[in-house]
Image 1 (spheres, rainbow, N blue to C red):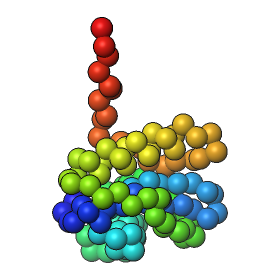
Image 2 (image 1 turned 30 degrees about the vertical axis):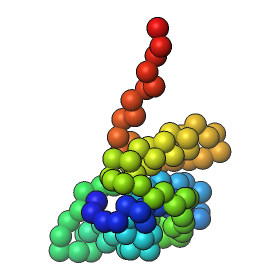
Image 3 (image 1 turned 180 degrees about the vertical axis):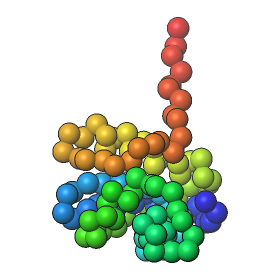
Length: 117
């Protein structure tokens, strides 16, 4: 992802029918990012000349009744910092029994904190 990381956000894409949630990050603005999710989905279902591979966000888009919203602004310095926060938010949502998260993969693997001996 290229861009101005001082404008980075963590966003949620929620299905209004099923309440399923996808968590992502972007520094492009969430409406622009939503457009890319929709384009990828149209390619996946064969509506575009350029096929797309499956992405877990499609579990939200298939219902055709969804919203995208800003979970938090997260100005940072680079992609690694942004993906670390996205990963933290995904793990937090996975541990919430009231959330049905569709994310299948973590953007990065967070290192455990050092253990003092």
